[in-house]
Image (cartoon, rainbow, N blue to C red; front, side, top):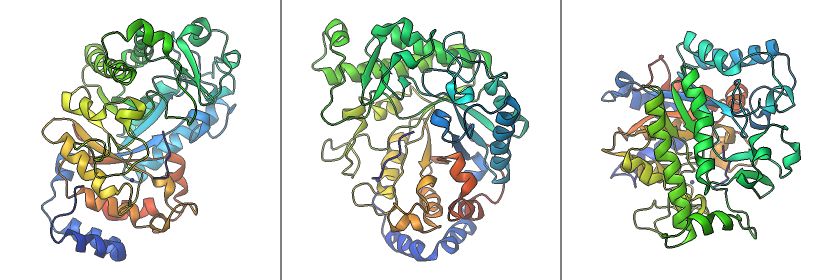
Length: 418
């Protein structure tokens, strides 16, 4: 999950006054909107989710090498907290670095469990997570990272049986990390097979991807996929178009294969929130973001929505209301317009981790900032819920921003939208 320091349409007449009032009024305005009626979102369902990151033990387990019983107890504590806060979905990272939190025939056990990649932790975390979540009325969205292999560049540090070691021509170093090469058809098929194993074996509610496709750009460094481009790039006007086609194929094929494998499992993606800036493309958002997924990650997120290849999209709108380069309100409006009429669900990724962080600007020091996000979202019927990054920040709730969200917006438990 990308953490970035940068981010609804331009508000209609009179709405600017509402924003100003919310800046000073916080809960009071949110309460007034809630009591004003006319919002049938709760009746039709609303996603209220939390990401639980396992890569580098960001959220869970709290450290490597805990006993199976201790790991399970920590996981259940996250689920119980979600219930207490009247959330209804947990997005659990089950394939953090081309390894697995279930006994996969394709990939080794994840090292976040025991500290040793490939070592059996003595239990099946994904099976337990699905069962315990469902017992509590929570959905379990299984979060996979398609192409990241390692947060280092030394293949020798991978488990001896790791597919990346057995197939070194699949792997490219870039920016201090290892990635599978998205330009290789055999890689695309393999990562789909590895993820679909979980779909086939567990009653997960959704397959969830984050924002890592082609790597985020690193200044002065090239992603050296020359061999794959030379072999497969004929017929494309340039390498960027070929790369986008590779990612398009991955998304389209995965959606098709999920539906073939288990009916009712949704497919969602949580991208960086700017497809393209308006200055780059008139169809883009009114932003000046330093990253554009279309151009930099070769991820045509708008196309995936317009083509209906995915069931939901959850842009990471990790910015505050009024930010000059990427205003939360404007980015949200752009996504609402993008999904309109497509049948694709829209959930909003929320940067709870920024609330109370002294390194963040003043709006993030206000406990009401996130609550204002949810209030703004009610102006857009397309928004079907929010997911908060991440579980340890939900637990810590540094300045009470999550408590404010719950008090203002989550007074009752609701079902997820379907």
